[in-house]
Length: 380
Image (cartoon, rainbow, N blue to C red; front, top):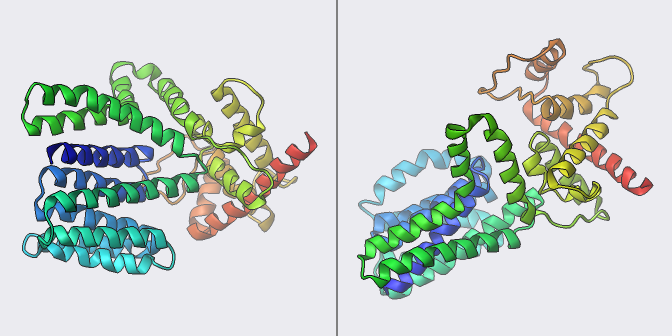
C-alpha cells in the first residue's frame, strides 16, 4: 500500500507542477495544476477535506473549458463550499457535477473524466470502498485529467506535447527513484520518503524558474540573456511540423506567433520556424520575428505616419500591441518611454476601441499576415 501511495502521489505531484510550469499566467493550468497537487497531498493525508481540494480546483478548470464566463461566480462560491466541506465532505462534489454537466456538449471527454473522478471521490468520502481501491482509481482519473489539460493547452499553443512531457516524466522519475529509494532502503519514515520524492521532482520540473530567480540575484547583468537561452532550449521539444495546406491552422499559428513577438524563447517553439533558414534556434527565431514585422509593415497605409480610419485599424491592432508592446487595457502597464505617436495610439485605443473589438481586429490582421507569409512561401 505504501509503495502504491508513493507512486500515485509522486505522479500527481509531477503532473501538477508540470502544468503550472508550462505557463504560470494561464488560469486553466493553475486550476488543473492545483487540483493535481491537492490530490498528491490527499494521498499522503487522506482526510475528506483534503480530498475536496482537487474537486473544487477541477470545477474551476472545467468551467474555464466549458463556460468561462461563470468562473467569476465560482471564485465567489469557492470559499463557502470549502468551508462547508469541514462539516459535509461530499458537498464539494455538487459543483463538480454541475460543471461536468455544463461541459458535456463542449468538452465531452472532460465530462467523462469528471464523472469518473466524482464516482471515485464519492466512494472514498462515503467510505463505500477501501482506500486500497479508491486511491488507485482516483489516481487514474487524475492522470487522465492532467494529460487532457496539457494536450488541450498544447493544441491551443500550436505545440507538440508528447516529447516534452515524456522528457519531463523520465527525468522526474529518475531523480525521484534516485533520492527516494535511499530513504526507503535505509528504513526512513514514510513521511520523509514522500517529502524527498516531492522535493526531487520539484527541483527537476521547476529547474528553469528556479534558475531564473538565482540568476536575478547572483548575475543580474546577464539574467535576461540566460533566461532567453533556457527558454529556447525548453521550447525545442515542443515544436511540431508545419502544415501549410490548412489555411485556417496557418492563420491560427501566425496569431500565436504574433502574441509571442517579443519573446524569442517562445518563438523557437512555433511551427513557423520552418519558414526560416537553417541555423541556431535563436537566430532562426530572430529571422521569424523579422518576417512577421515585414508582413505587419505591409499592412500600413501608404499615406501618413499614424491614422485612425478603417484602413489603419488592422495595422494599428498588431503593430502597437505586439511590436511596440503597448497594452492599453492593463492597469499594470506604466510606460514612460512612449513617443508622441505611441501616446496618440494609446489614447485612441483607450477611448475609441473596445477590448473585444481590438481582439477581433487582431484576428483579422493575423489572417492577413498569414496570407502574406504564405505568399512568400509560394514564391520561394
